[in-house]
Length: 139
Image (cartoon, rainbow, N blue to C red; front, top):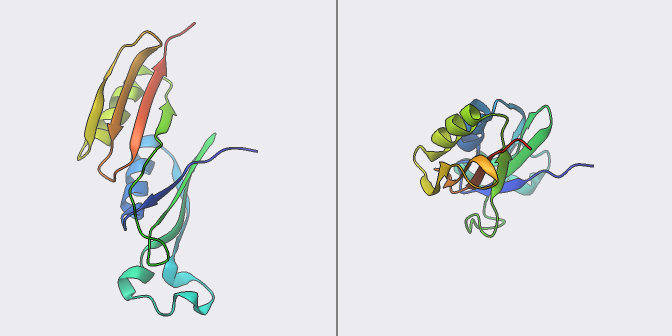
């Protein structure tokens, strides 16, 4: 068993996941669009809606992140009440990833040393997803 965050986007899931793959080193293993559904449930969708992401899966050796674009079946209401917490292996990784997620986004807590971490910071990326970047202190 494993736990995998599942995010919802406002039509930009593909761009977000391409950026995450670049920053986090994962690989997009699956990307399905609404227009690729095998049944007729999506026939009434516009071409723009058919091109939205129905499901995308980004994976690396020990984590998975998944998402879809909101559509006519459920409206986009933003990402609320959660953050994606990313624990990295080095201060350099924390700096690089935090900087990358900050581009076009909003820093809510600068990346800095805390009593529990060599580096910790909070940022909402350009796609509206809140992230917690953490490089823990060695015990």
